[in-house]
Image (cartoon, rainbow, N blue to C red; front, side, top):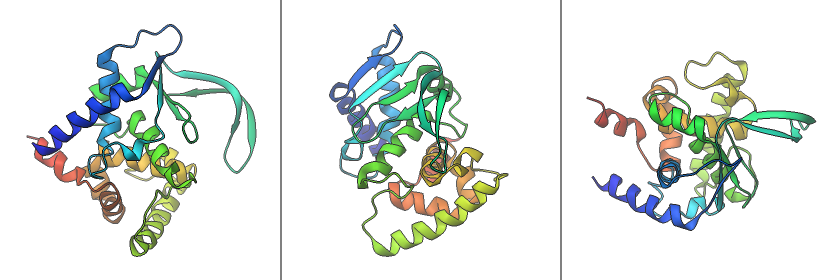
Length: 222
């Protein structure tokens, strides 16, 4: 219906207005770009502002397999570490590129009933950055909702940090920015699971993204 038409329109806008690069001699096809664009645009469906929330996603670099980076990076807790990192995706600050592993994107698209979605995870980081800080709290203008968001998220984040959460991947306990990205993945990829185990958190993400993904999933399931 209307959502599908809107998504098609956003994808048609996203693909030609972004710079696409293939890493390591990889051959990037139009179909691959469309698959990535559809998942990125899904996050924008409820905002009614076109692709404005993805204003910082200017360049998408697609790697064939796991991305291997040799660099200095934060280990968490402010500790800098030098060495090899193996990633399925990474979002660079501000207008820096979005890095994605096509292997991961393809696997998650094919088995779209899991909790993982690297495109949504990295795009969520970009949305989190819109207010200038990547802290797990995206731009929220309503003071009451902001207070509810912070309280609900901190409680659930505390549980994720302790581990063993039935719905939220343990990586979400790394820090609040990763928590927002991991729960965003779950909100779009496994919404009924999130709603079942964390109804208040689900409601916060439904209010923020302005989409009822669990209701959509139930409509689509036979």
